[in-house]
Length: 114
Ligand code: 5GP
Ligand code: ZN
Image (cartoon, rainbow, N blue to C red; front, side):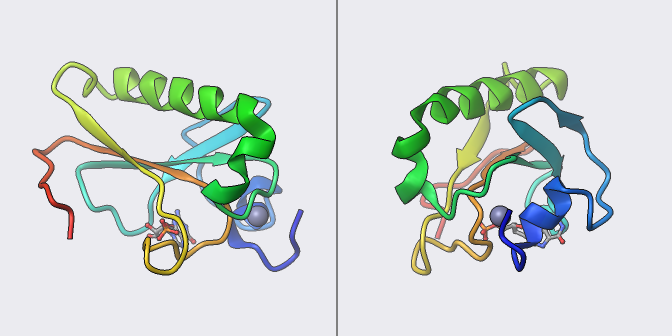
């Protein structure tokens, strides 16, 4: 755990955030500033600063996508379509330095995203 990491605090229940789902590797909760009717964050329990470090834990890549598909199915957006986003670094729009996958759906997504 990184002491000054917001998502580590949520993982370790030092910051009260209702969890939508949890397993041994990840937690899932609503984004505080949703950009779509459904906007979930899928967050590994271990601290990984960004996508750049994910290959060191390659098993997590599969698990994160499995979780995202499962949440899309639970929210009934799997057939209509949805978007997964991993922002990486400052120009990638990453604001929290703890790897997370955004799952967004419930409206048509625009492209390019801007
Ligand atoms: P990033 O910009 O790093 O890809 O995504 C970070 C996301 O975390 C943002 O979409 C932001 O709205 C969300 N976020 C930031 N602080 C909190 C918080 O305290 N609680 C929750 N639930 N989401 C947060
Ligand atoms: Zn962290």
